[in-house]
Image (tube, rainbow, N blue to C red; front, side, top):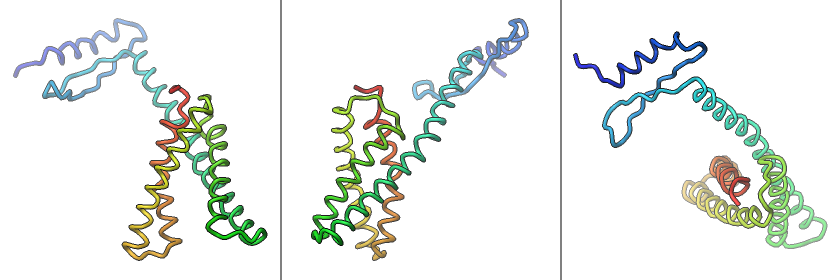
Length: 187
């Protein structure tokens, strides 16, 4: 049986770990496209801990920002509906005009909550607000397509279709806002 030199050196590195006090070696296997096979990647304990901390901080960010993103969306939707209802019932504004006004109020609330709470962005408002408008337009197109398929294509009641569409949009909306709109690292 032939021994792979990389595996032999990995084994010897594992054998040497007792010689270096406190040093731990981690081995992970990957299949690079150009290699056509398994190759070991040997990481020191410092590299492994750094990787684990990075993963942990990403998970902490998602655990923090995803519920706040969903909550901000709920509050923004409530503001949209309340504004629309008040405009129709008290100000006697046409429902179509009232929902445009309500949508605008909801969008402002959602922007502020996502910027300050969900993603704690430090990016300039000039950048994030213009990206937010583009993201809203894109999500509105996706909302329209998914809703049309569910409501008009499958004949699902419009309220159930809207709830299902909203649930479908949470993932792409969260990713778009987290990675692009409110990303503090991109200027």
